[in-house]
Image (cartoon, rainbow over all chains, first blue to last red; front, side, top):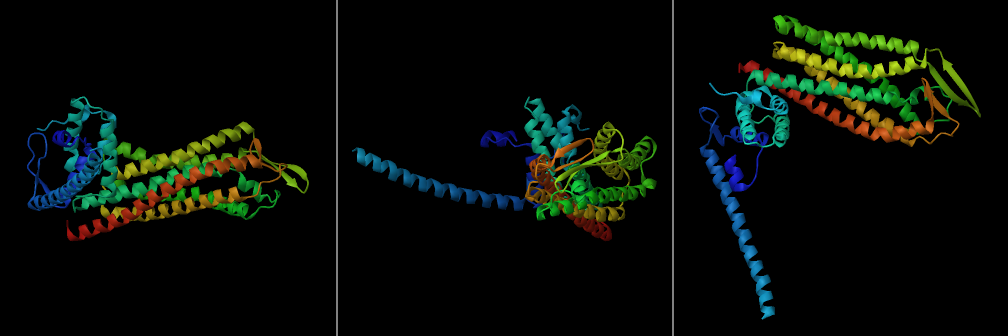
Length: 86
Length: 345
């Protein structure tokens, strides 16, 4: 959870985390491993890895499209302003 | 051996963890405890985590993702759903008791007040129906109690058994108190009406005792309504502590459906009552109505009802929706438990 908090800046509560975990486990996207000293570790299944890859690709497509459009509009806006100032 | 930090957690956190279903606690309970212990060790406030746990527990009960396909899990879900359908019914009874204290019915039935409009007639009929609701729900409570009695041979033994017996006896004591209070109320409450007959005002006093007795009994009536709620908790706890089989739940499922239906009808009736009262044309200032020591002008009663009924109706509708959802879940879970039993899961 600390990792999620560090890279995403989002603090997740125990109800949310284990609720998500239960849903992922139900869909066969993660599976529990043998418990170590303190906790149950979980591992991504093959199906989970596939779904995660698809989701990441989708996210990447959205961010790249968004970035490209933002760049274009920024160029139009600031390029136009720069032209007017010149 | 794994460390169990749960006893070090604040009461609210432990309570929130217990709000999850048994199957969930078996699977994720230990990890959740560790999670909370880590947060506490880092010196973080647990308030947000407790709220998150309560929301999570509610979600786990409403939509049990990953619930194992085993008879005990579905049996427990059925039992919990029955409790969620019947306990709100008794909470509804408390609200109905608040409503029936408005003496619209008694005065209007006398026929001496200014003619009732359609709204007034609807309110009067609704109040007559509402007077039956506590009786019907009281019968449901008795049926639930009788169903739990049948579990006596599978009740816990020893000290836990004595506690179980206490739980089962509590509703019976509540029933005796109810009958006693009702009889005392009928005997001791002075009924005073001031009614308008044509252009004259007449006072009608029915036999009764001291005004303080009426006030005391009125309070006792409210206490009884809360005692009924307590009784249902006792029955639910007693059922939880006995060694329940799937077949034991059949009567409970029917009871849950029936109480949820009654509560839904009560909620609709209260809505009709409130709309009816607010649509009754105001009576002339001469008209008074009252029961017991205080006789209030009708306009004041109408104003107080108009102020209270939207909140009471909203609470009742919300409670009845919870009960209806729980009753549907109880029926479905019972079916699944039966199927799993047949399949030998």
